[in-house]
Image 1 (cartoon, rainbow, N blue to C red):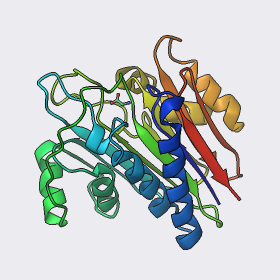
Image 2: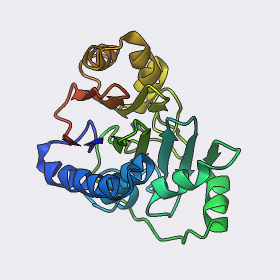
Image 3: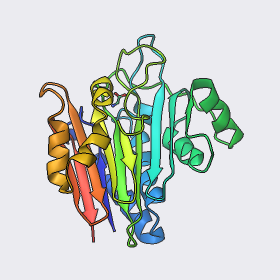
Amino acid sequence: MKIICHGGAGHTPKVQDGVDKAAEEGWKILKETDNPTLAATAATIVMEDDFRFNAGTGSCLREDGRVQTDAAVATSDGRMSSITNLENFKNPVLIARELLDEFVTMLAGEGAVQFALEKGFKKTKVKGSEKGWTGDTVGAVAISSTGKIAVASSTGGVRGRPVGRVGDTPLWGSGFYCDKEIGILATGVGEAITKQLMCYRAYQHSNNLEKALEWGIRLLPKDTGVGMIAIRSDGQIYGTSNTSMPFKIIKD
Ligand code: GLY
């Protein structure tokens, strides 16, 4: 069993305690359930509920001052889901997780809201934060004792971007990817990550996780903040960034 969490490429070790708390919560759930999906989402919720992070309650503001969030979940048994441009739900990652078992894989805006309400999620005013850097995201990757992997990711996007803008976080292969061999997440400037199809290409680059992620980071210019975390089914676990991205690994 292993879990790795990050608090965003735009963040600093000042929020390391929040990332540690998220990893500890995810680890607790992993120990109790051996379910990596529950563990990765539990860790992500801790950061969505911590106003210092650009996700859930602390999401940054769009150009017109409103908050629109994105989230994604994927599992090594072939399921994936994401929601984008969701307004007024405090834990978007739970709505993405709910979508995992549906035929539809991605919902945006009004459709995501409708789905959330149908599934019993309650609307809550999410005011967001005027702080928030370019491209913060929070997320976690977990692996069970039997080698099942899951990834979960959530973001308020990038401060000042237009309403309706879609970053990398909800995009398969760009901000997240998971299959039997790997669970991988990106954080950073969504437009740059998307253009590089970063998660999938990094995964394809090498079986050596450290080499793969370091290569992935170098796809972007040094001054474009980006980070990645991942776990491979053979037990490799790694996180890296060209910023001071806080992250935490817990393993037995
Ligand atoms: N990486 C978060 C975003 O660009 O939306």
